[in-house]
Length: 70
Image 1 (cartoon, rainbow, N blue to C red):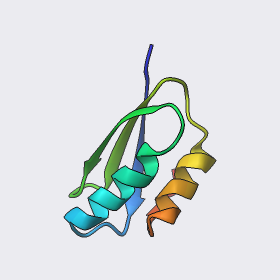
Image 2 (cartoon, rainbow, N blue to C red; image 1 turned 90 degrees about the vertical axis):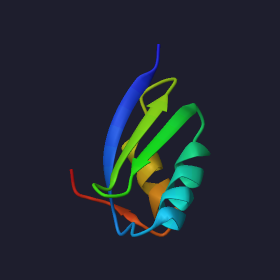
Image 3 (cartoon, rainbow, N blue to C red; image 1 turned 180 degrees about the vertical axis):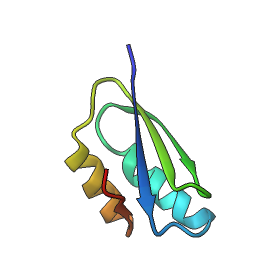
């Protein structure tokens, strides 16, 4: 059974931004799919188990962006 979580990323402006966020979040253990919508900043992550938001936040920050306050 897969888990789906949605986050809002602040600061993405182009396709390169999308690729950076997708790559970093995709490297988190258990992540199966990352879908990024540039216009809304919405990042939908499908994973094998629920993800720790702190891990997702760290991956997004590694890519050079930040999560919007939830």
